[in-house]
Image (cartoon, rainbow, N blue to C red; front, top):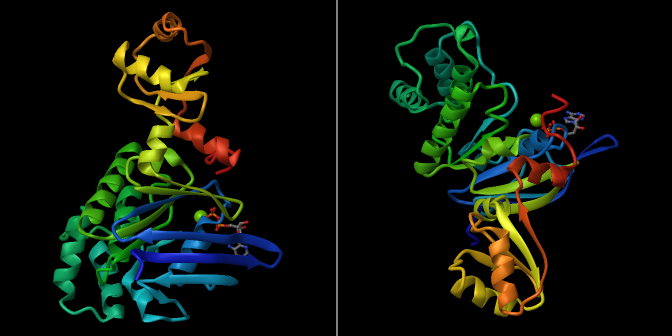
Amino acid sequence: MSNAIIEVKQLSKQFKSNVAVNNVNFNIRKGDIFGLIGPNGAGKSTLLKMIGGLIYPSSGEIHLFDHTMRENHPYFERMGLLIEEAGIFPHYSAYKNLDLIAISYGIKNRKKHIEQLLELVGLDKSNKTKVKNYSMGMKQRLGIAMALIGSPDVLILDEPINGLDPQGISEIRQLILELNKTGITLIISSHILEELSKVATTYAILHHGKIIEIISKEELLLQCEDRIELEVDDPKMTVLILENHLGIQRYKVIDDHTIYVYETDIETQQIIQSLAENKIFVHSIAKHKQSLEQYFLERTGSSGGADD
Ligand SMILES: Nc1ncnc2c1ncn2[C@@H]1O[C@H](COP(=O)(O)OP(=O)(O)O)[C@@H](O)[C@H]1O
Ligand SMILES: [Mg+2]
């Protein structure tokens, strides 16, 4: 047994000559919020559809709950999906939309299950309004409720924040965190890293069908935290001076010459002076600032939202 709830191994999908997903590998642990980030056309929806069992891989494997997935495997039922357009009937109420799915799934105690889901996603159970009159945010929350019918262990949400206003974005983020607290593992895609930056525990950056980086939330935040980059000859001595003379606690020795200092309220001049007094020559010192979006663009070389 591994502690991964989902394992994707050498997964590829080819549409004629177009390789939409190219030899992708990753693991998702139970309780993760796995953020799949990539510009439009990167292959996010195709990858999520394969994991959700909606389309079949050209090659590679998906292991779900430690079982290799084959066509129509019952374990696919332990996943809830909201990929591209949710199949919402616009002329029915939210309740009725959910009831139709619950009937088709053979859910017992449908009324209770549906009322609980409506409450969970923040929709009024007695609201008879036709869904066509709902806001984008309400429709999106209904889509999530639809994916939650049958109480899945894993929820796959493809760009759930796309097109929402700031209020809607914040509500969906809140909902994602609440669902995760109940023990649900989530896979969420976005073409904007910033959008998922407050929720995901792990990020995979997908570009032209390939995973180019998998990074934990902690590592990503550290990468994008303001820092002073220092190049010196003697990092060991330098660290002693940083700590003892300047009281700096948060730093990281990167290699034989480079130290990152994460306490940026200190003046670079002060560091240079202290080191010079102790006969340490500073080759270079620079303040480094990088937003999450710059980090993403540097890796994908494209603006995620530009070709919407
Ligand atoms: N059903 C399909 N038939 C042919 N090509 C497809 C199909 N679905 C997706 N593609 C192609 O695969 C690539 C990845 O698409 P997609 O997975 O939708 O990317 P994303 O969701 O990241 O925007 C694109 O080049 C797209 O045109
Ligand atoms: Mg897509």
